[in-house]
Length: 330
Image: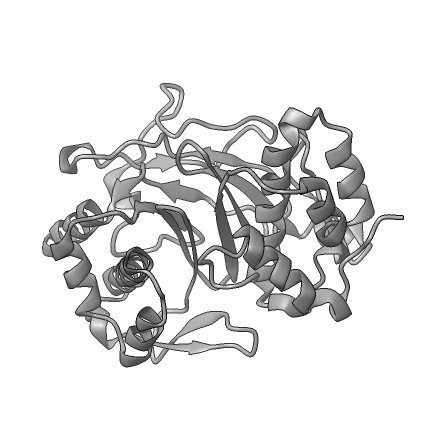
């Protein structure tokens, strides 16, 4: 009999996840997804004179897309992820968190008092640095879009912990996730988004973890794969589910087995059903994001397909320099 996670097991499951490092440092589970695209960021640092941005609207629903592939054309500068979100665009940013001391200090200087308290709670120095940089980058990105000083931004948190902006005129929606040395940020308008990233790594008892978290059909799909492919398929399924839960802001109250995603390599990237309803699943968009070698991520939102714009991955220091340069040009 396949064990299924329900509300009564939610906190027990949280303990299993923490023991396996599955929660990482992400801001809890909260996202939905449903249609098709995969996005590859290439995995190299971009220089200031190589600030290429790619339009990812038209993509293959089954195969990964290389962001810098010759078949993809750079979009016009007026449509780049900069200080303005055009219509229904979703902007994606991928950042390497490992950085120099001066960049860490720049990020720490713009944190709020409650963020400083959260930073101090991490036991190890490298985790404190990664938290400070990831939050500093988030504040810097949102500041760039809103033309508000990064240190002055205020956040509120939903009952399940999903953050939102307070006191801004622009209806900006965002979500972020980090794992290992990578952080991802999704930013759009008037549409809740969720994003989750995980560093692919060896796990103990992948099949047991799947039985405790995934729906019966997903477990069957996972077990039908060769053993060598199961770990990557597990993380593929996990990030898609986390993205959905983050989009809806459900946290641990949303059972992971209450909806089904496709997880086999080559399958269409989509929701199969949500609470048993395939029609509801079709109202969601789901994208696989490959930010760097060894990482898997997913983006989800409930809407008709939106244009996706992204830059290649860069270091936190490079991103802050890019934002400062573009701010001077606005």
